Amino acid sequence: MKTCLPALTLVACCLVGSAMAQTTATEPWVRGTLSPAQKATGLFVQLQNAQGARLVTAASPAAGIVEIHEMAMVDGVMRMRALKDGLELPAGQTVHLKPGGYHVMLIDLKQPLKEGDTVPVTLTLKGKNGKDEVLSLQAPVRQSAAPMKH
Ligand SMILES: [Cu+2]
Image (cartoon, rainbow, N blue to C red; front, top):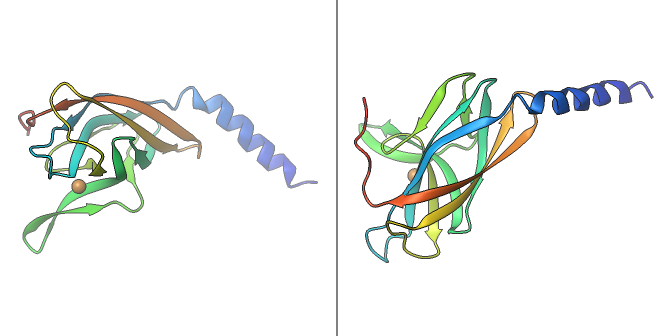
């Protein structure tokens, strides 16, 4: 069974490498909703992985649908779109999910979100070693956006 050997080697590499491949999530927050009619909002956070990784999915018990979005100019208009392949985290770089840029979209909210609430969000990332990493965040709700830094 020659084919077993590479597979075993790969598993061993992943186990050894996993401790080094941690993604850090800094300052997560969710924008509060302005009215009970508002059924979607954004989660913002700074992500970093020394080896590089890809944010592939996100989930939250607070929302029916969670997508990874970007804001992009389309025909001169700012529009959101879902990143079907996820969001790439280049090795060693901090990727800012922030208003006007990348964000995790919480859609079909179960209830309004107000200042003082905390939203649990789970981020699943795929590391360069092919191993999945799951980050559990507790994101405080803020009613207004922090000033954008340029
Ligand atoms: Cu969005």
